[in-house]
Length: 217
Ligand code: ADP
Ligand code: ZN
Image (cartoon, rainbow, N blue to C red):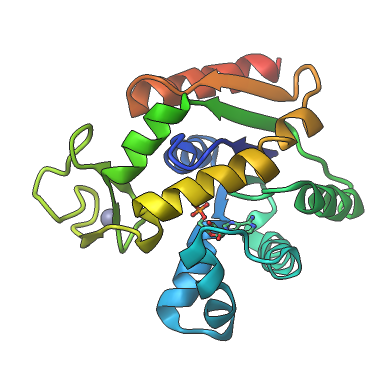
């Protein structure tokens, strides 16, 4: 089973992708998390991608595609994968299709989470993320029980350096120009599931699980 999560920065796709992966026993692969880990660890990959992420623009396809395809070849990905943040443009989508064809596999479902633009900006500007397990919180909508600490693992919460107003604007611009066209690319009946992203994390999560179950019968 291969599922892609599509949605703007702030749509909740990371949270929902993690939830669905856990519910369906699939591996959650978030390209942004892979890159942030590399930056934090100061690896060669980290040094390559840092400046792009700081500006809110896409890391070059060649680098991104290699990192993700390598990750999905690992044995733990055999049962299937939930992709979060990848593919992010047409070239990446085509590279993924090609790699899956070689494994006699294909993308089963694409979950597109729709959220109005004003809401995206509001969500991103109050976002805090666990440094350890990546769980996101919102200063007003979903604050942690203890300020600055993750409810799940006690890790330290921090604000992503690319969650500043200017970089958020750039990321949204890049999303609408390069990633949103993928909705058309995957738009086949029974494949693309368009989901309303309004509501609590639990509500949206239940909605997605229900839609995935319905679509597979
Ligand atoms: P968000 O969706 O909230 O913007 P991500 O964590 O998915 O956050 O991505 C953060 C940054 O990592 C992006 O702005 C981009 O620089 C880089 N990145 C992540 N995934 C990709 C990708 N598939 N292709 C190119 N760059 C990517
Ligand atoms: Zn945590």
